[in-house]
Every structure is written in structure tokens, then in C-alpha cells.
Amino acid sequence: MKKTLRVIPLLALASLFTAACGSSAESGASSGSAAVAPAEKGDKKTCADFGGSGEGTFNSQCYVPAPTPFNAKWTGNFEKNTSNEEVATIEVTSKADRTVTWGTVSVWCYDGSGKQLELTPLVGKSKFKRYMRKGSGIFRTVKPGKDKLAPGDTMVIEGPNRAMLPEGLDSCAVEVTSWGWEEGAKLFLSVDRPNVPNMDIRPKEGFK
Image (cartoon, rainbow, N blue to C red; front, side, top):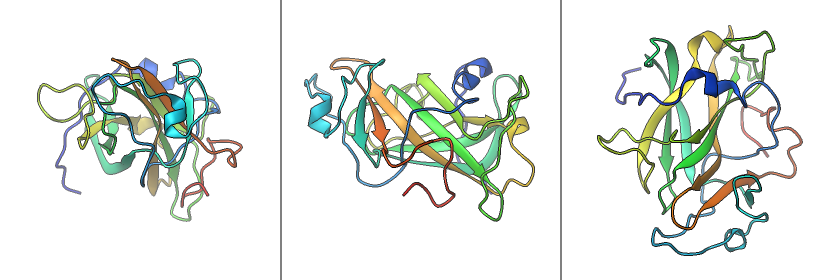
């Protein structure tokens, strides 16, 4: 596949695995009409304004119905990061109408039959089902001089290290499972899927 986008180096690799090696209470979807973020002019919309529940703080997020205001996918490409390691390139496009500065990107991988595969950590032996990259600053656009994901922007971020990916890999699904803004009227949101008992287990065709 021809590469048309470049990876913007992000956090140190050690930070990639704090959430990746275990199950998580987060849930999400990656496309479709969504709980739209408020305008960028310091408005005071709350979690309830998005049809969600929760405080909307970092420690007690606002859980809103799926889907999220993003399209996300693995490009199928790999590029070298600042540590000279090959990583998958993940493309995320924002449909939110507010600049997003924080979030979580989740990745699940499958073989040709659609069976979900386990990934191997770079450190340790415990394999895991879902790779996650989260935190401030992970949403960086490919536009020079920009370090936030503004409305309508598409950016490419660093995904799983190639050495983590399993044999027999055919495809990987990507979803933005939480997002928020840390400036002005701060709010942290996460997608709520009450019918999904374990977000680490995802069918190839997506959550129902």
C-alpha cells in the first residue's frame, strides 16, 4: 500500500503498555453520528447535555451512547518511530466540533477467519487481547505546527509495535474509546456499551 501520511512521534513506548495488558472497563465504537463536542468558546455543557451519565472528570468520566465522533483505522502500513522501532500507523479523523486534546485509541487484531488474536508485550510474558494508547498529546495532526486534533482534522498516530503483533495477522480494527478536552470547559467522555461485558473481546465485525 502506498504511504500518503507520516507518523508523528508521540509518548515513550513504556507508556503504551500501562493499559494494554489487562481488561478494561472502557467501551466504544469508531464511526457514525456521535455525541458531538461543544463549541470552542468556553461553553459550560455538562455530561447530561450529551445524553450521558457521570461527572465528566478525568477520574469519573461521562459515559455516552455509541458511536463516537471519530473515524479510525489502521492504514496497513508500518513506519519507524523515534526509537527506530517499526510501529503500525493509525489514522484518526475527528467529527467533533471542538479540539480534542486527550483520548484513548484501542486496537484489536484478527486472522483471516475473523478470530481475534492475542498480542505479545515487549516486556513480560502475559499476552493481551486489546492494545491501548491513551493520554494527553496522542491526538496530533499531520499539519505542521499543530499538536491537537481540531474539527475535521485527520492525523496519523503511532500504533502497536510490529514485534507485538501475532503470527497469522490479517487485519486490525481501531476505535477511539474515550476522548476529551483539557482546556476551557474541561470534559472527559467515554463510550458506554452496557451490553458488552468485556471490551477486550471484540468481534471482527464490531460490537453489537
